[in-house]
Amino acid sequence: MADSSWFSKFPKMDRATLVELRKYLDSSFRDFSREYGDLIESFFDPLLGFLIWFEKLLVQSPWWAVLLSITALVYFSSRSWKLSLGVIVSFLLIGYFGMWEDTMRTLSIITVCTLMAIIMGVPIGILMARNNRTQAIVTPILDVMQTMPAFVYLIPVVMLLGIGKVPGVIAVVIYAIPPVIRLTNLGIRLVDKEVLEAATAYGANSMQRLMGVQLPLASPTIMAGINQTIMMALGMVVIASMIGVKGLGQPVLKSITNQYFTLGLFNGLAIVALAIIFDRTTQAYAKRSQQHMQGGQHD
Image (cartoon, rainbow, N blue to C red; front, side, top):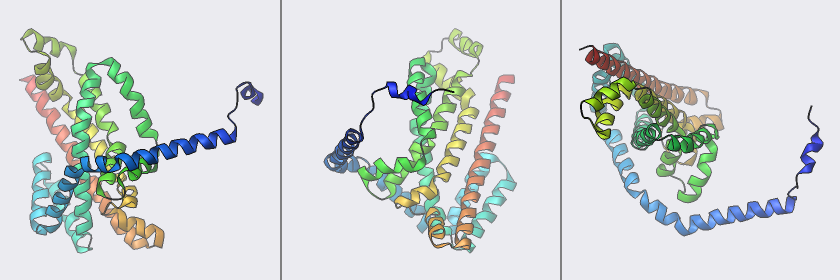
């Protein structure tokens, strides 16, 4: 067993110096947030406007119109009547137990977070697949993002942007984006080299190979990454409710602090229902796209 005196060989930082260093870092971040907080907040104003508009669209639209739209979207993605029927039953029960508005708010947040994760994550995954140096730089960052406790994300975000929807969205995206980046990178790297060589032989350039060959063949893997991103975003809903994100997370948080068992149970089951719907729909779409690609290759 290693001797603990081994550590004594290194110079130690005294407690006063450590305290001063922490104070300096804290004050520097506070000064930065006071100086540039308003500027950073104004940068996210378009995102806040879109969030408010989309939430109002879901909450204020007739329930039957929203239910019909969601069911149609699920059916065209999965081609499953059973899953579509499950969606109808789940949302009718959600409405019956008085959780419709909170569910719509959660649905709007998760949809926006997923879109942001896809818009940012897929290009980063493509860059990682095309450049080994980029992969070497980004991979440790993704490791830190996936192992860092979710509560830690809230501290700098709240200090910069305060309490509200946008800080919640940013925290959820940071927490949920690694899977779509990793699996986009993996999917593109797994594309058969012979297929790429054939495309090059037919005169395809780098962008044509990417858009016409690599992304379509990698789409099932990318969809698996999107699926995991959605699941992680839903898992962050309760934590994001601590900084003012309205939705199913707030009643769950309230039930924890006040020991309301049934309130937490019903809202928790609503989150589970959303998770199952998203999971089954994305999996079915990925499976259909994979079968389509295999059919195209056989043809």
